[in-house]
Amino acid sequence: MDIYSLWSEFVGWGQRSRTETPFLIDILSRNGCRSVINAALGDGFTTIKLLGKGFEVTSNEIDPRYEAIARKKAAERGLSLDVTHNNWLGFSRVGKKFDAVLCLGNSLCLLKSKGEITQALREFRTTLKEGGILIADQRNFDYLLDERPLRGKFRYSKHYVYCGDSVDGYPISVSDDNITFEYRHKGEGIIGNFNMLPYRREEFIEMLRKAGFSEVEWYGDYKKRDINADFFQFVARR
Ligand SMILES: C[S@@+](CC[C@H](N)C(=O)[O-])C[C@H]1O[C@@H](n2cnc3c(N)ncnc32)[C@H](O)[C@@H]1O
View 1 (cartoon, rainbow, N blue to C red):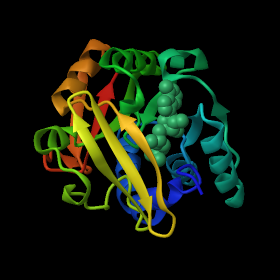
View 2: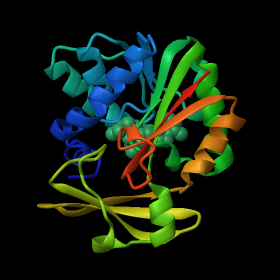
View 3: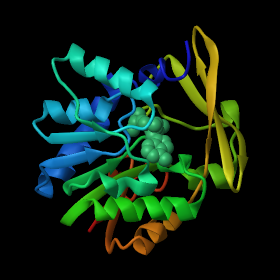
């Protein structure tokens, strides 16, 4: 079994639906959003939850391994997915405008540079209707860069975003420009790793502003401005 086929066990659908889903529904509803594009479909968790709540959701995925898993999970629930296949660096090719763009699950750190992240944010902004919102999240990289906790020293509640019991993700190396996370499944042992480009909360807010977003609000584990959170969420308006 590889990291893709075990991703849902890392996500932990039950717990994530108790934390991320109510937050998204609240923010999307308060902002009058109906049409949503989920820029990082992954195993389908966020898309499937929002489809179930009646939102019009388009999804984007460039990795066929994730797309196949998400399509299977949707079909099991009697849903079908509308999937586009654009790299975030050319995301506006999707050619339609949405009330909201979502990029969740600590995904933007998979890009190669802060310049690329800013470019992706510009593309997301172009894909929004006037007054539409981007919702993005990231790990608390401030904590990781300040304390450089490795393996068992990594503090992580498992209540937010990646909540599964059977897969652990933890840093095995931390430097200013790369953090490597290793993933270990209880039964299968080590199943893979991902390299992430770390950036601080304030740096991300700066990148959002450079990309043209003026109004930005941030949350920590879905509460307003909690700096000790596992993950930060950002809501930025076009
Ligand atoms: C860490 S997974 C997160 C998946 C899902 N959002 C979640 O929360 O579980 C990262 C996702 O970003 C996608 N991705 C990575 N780099 C990308 C890029 N340059 N353009 C578009 N998608 C990308 C991957 O294919 C994958 O779906």
